[in-house]
Length: 238
Ligand code: BJW
Ligand code: ZN
Image 1 (cartoon, rainbow, N blue to C red):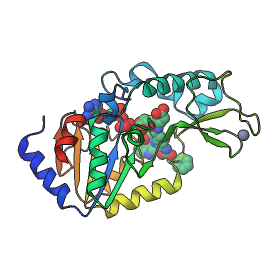
Image 2: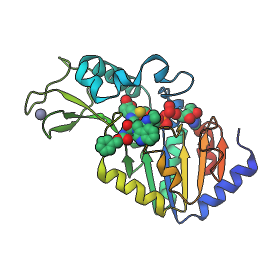
Image 3: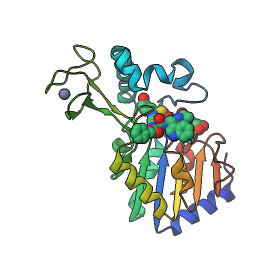
């Protein structure tokens, strides 16, 4: 667990910062009962990413891919934000220049009350057509048929998320890069920093504080690495 001294330095640095960016990953939702991807109990222990999180997997077997996302929607629906998500809401209220960038699809930052969220890997509560420009907010936990058909053109709808090999949403990504390069501090929470280009944001920042239960590939390079669960560390920082 992070020491009191490191926590104090991190708290001071954050309170003095005129501008803060935060990058979150699956670890911030772990204490809400949402499985992470990598590490103990991670989704990729039981599923192969290339079978579920690629456009090729969807083209091959859209039914299985949809079943996996509907299962994850039901887990998320039954959970809720934790103390880590809520601490970031407080941090946003305390700082006029604050940008929350998340790799998470789960919508728990929205449910906690964060106002401005850049979702670089999309949103599990969105669906869009593979063929036309149709998209919608989608709270469904099941559909009469899989894949659900587009109401405009009849082609399959897909989850509104970013799979491996796909480009990140262009404007959202540009805003994330700008926020990180202009921020006095980047707080990196609960990400293994192994997925690109999101992990590149860490290298663009002036001063990085990391919060994670484990060491990551960036831990030795950041200014302050706080080891421990985000549901305990983040409330101690605000
Ligand atoms: C806690 C905790 C607690 C636990 N408290 N902490 C450069 C080099 C190598 C490869 C590439 C590269 N550039 C691109 C690539 C390829 C690829 C990639 O990155 N591959 C690597 C894996 C090798 N990237 C892509 O394909 C990206 N697209 C792209 O580059 O497109 C190029 C292009 C340009 C123009 C046109 C066309 C194409 C897209 C990446 C999309 C990633 N999508 C996923 C799935 C989304 C859908 C879904 O969820 O189903 O996003 S993958 C998955 O990983 C998900 C996550 O957002 C992402 C990051 O994972 P995250 O959040 O870090 O979670 P974990 O599980 O890895 O880590 C959890 C952490 O929490 C751990 O560290 C724990 O210790 C910690 N933790 N409990 C605090 N209580
Ligand atoms: Zn359509």
